[in-house]
Length: 272
Ligand code: F6R
Image (cartoon, rainbow, N blue to C red; front, side, top):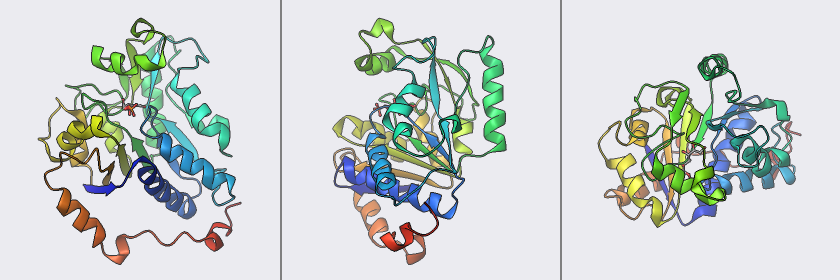
């Protein structure tokens, strides 16, 4: 696992936006997995800025949802589909029909889950953005989720509903159920990139990076992935035992591990 420690949230967002820019330049029809919540917002701001300045185009890319609430009316402003449109897609040139997600309004959610799995199997995600919940969930794989789980309906813990109540009038309005990519599904992405900032994430970060691999802390499953990057700010890195080592590894990474310089000149080559 690659752990990158940066000064603050905007540097974390910019660093991951660099990775996405590099991906989309080398593969314009890339499949990008999107998370919701507060953590990825700086990434999305940075991507929007790159698109606005004519540096990057997503016209051929496809976006894939990590999870979605079950039980909200279609078009509800707290649905994750609405969130992703508001925070990202409305500001980019990716066609809106190329945001794919599970059909949470299907009569039989199990069929919707199987269909989403089939879609992901046909177009594997190149880069999956993740945040981490205070109980270690990734997507909405709550503690004790099988580390090889696939897309399915999950019941949220009281803690997660409490954490997300800030987006609703009250906790009673937060749905109990979601459809989420499974941990096994997430691990199928070519590259998984988790962002975590602020002291509130420090204990989750140390458990996911340095703790034991356990279904009690689903994010620890990233330890199994051959290409996982965890980008944290100083505050979220506060409990890492090997922080100095991670800094040293990153500062001394070999040239072939560095992203090529993304100059304006390259930006205008063939992407717009
Ligand atoms: C969001 C998601 C969740 C969040 C996690 C952290 O699509 O799947 O796993 O990433 O709950 O949320 P924030 O970033 O709001 O702290």
